Length: 605
Image 1 (cartoon, rainbow, N blue to C red):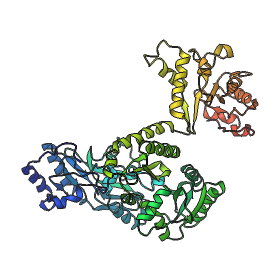
Image 2 (cartoon, rainbow, N blue to C red):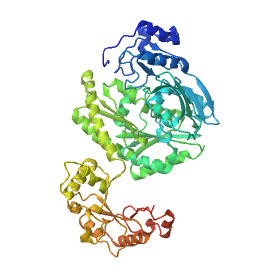
Image 3 (spheres, rainbow, N blue to C red):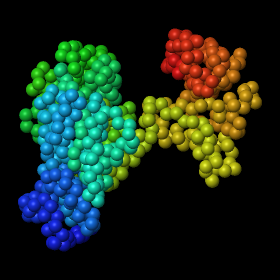
Image 4 (cartoon, one colour):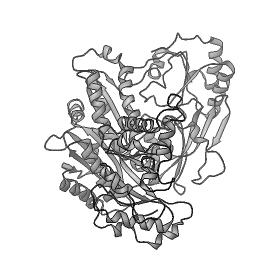
């Protein structure tokens, strides 16, 4: 797959590159080059005049210095396990393979660090950590092939990212060769380093565009003393999300992995992966693979049982099996790990490795499945991945009996459908509730929009609110909250100019959706607050919100508590300026004074 005709490299220049690493490690034979020129799915194939295999950071430095002087393009490559073609020489670039930089320079169990060169495989690093009773927590199905340099350069995720984070989280320091050959040695073992810029994070995730990572100091953690693994049948991604909440509530930081898989994927694995069997007696629409780990030797089994019992009692869990042995736990994990490999047997698939907010995963899956199957009738979506951190492998498999080549030619079109939904959902699901600042919306609708200047403020304001509501909320199960001051007539209600609209926008109250929660705030003490019954009469749910000073906050809270109405959600205290945190101790928590309220209540902050 070449974007432009390959450029020839002068033989004399190739000889200079070869002299740096030695003839044996300057690969020019096409057969020996083949493993470096395509990725595992064979979607990307390249060509190169030479594969260079340096054995030291000095040799990498010399190669990049010569490449910089002669404007020779270089493609760095680790274990060649990437699936998007970034490691493939599309335009006849020289391949810089780092697999010979495979020394573990130091394992320091006291500092809980391991210093690895870029070509060390993930498996080798994990084994070296285990030898000193430590854990390197990055975990990938390709651990036997993928390398530390590649993992850092792509900021790779992990099935254990929920507990330990992704590749960037593990790096304390790096050694990197810049494009002109200079070596940046930042192999720092310090957990606290506030001496200046954190330069390592410029290179982690940069995929070799700013420099070539040649070594890294990685953080280790104590090895767990107990691990429990369960394979769970659930009815839907929403049920899986509820189970995640139960697991986090009961097990806290012990939840190491939380993987989501569909029935269609399990059936695919059972057909095409030898030695795999269904862990549960009956089929279920979705499955969750949960792993808990702890430093305590005893008690973790009871925690897992409590999590699953809570799920069964609430109807979230339909069936579950807890691994009774290490071998059974490995069998559960093998099912998950074979999802990628088994797809090769059922036709072409368009891959997406995406992250959305955890709360958005169920909505994303429902909407993207509908969009993709409408776009390509018969297409078979296959979504699986790390529900615990919102990282989903969303793959679209060709319709049965369709032409593979023709289907894969629509790769970019399918990407566009999926990515459009991701952008929308990531905007919408910043939280379970979406808050809109009134002032910001008004500015969008008037001053900063030439087409809006001179228009009716209320209509402009209402249009901006309605557009946001339609785009963000739609039919999704999230809330939209807004401050109510721009929707109140200060003269009619007797409020000061700071507690209601001064911009003529209050008529918009009758022009916006009534399912918006209005946060009605006041900072002046009064006997009655007419906005509260007015907003509830209009059908809005109201969240009374106090500001400063304290006597006004107490007065508004007392008034709000007297309003026995289902539209009244609770009381929110927001404060800054003259009110100090210590002052809030002068009145009891809101949760105590509002025992008969339905809905949510928050203590003052």
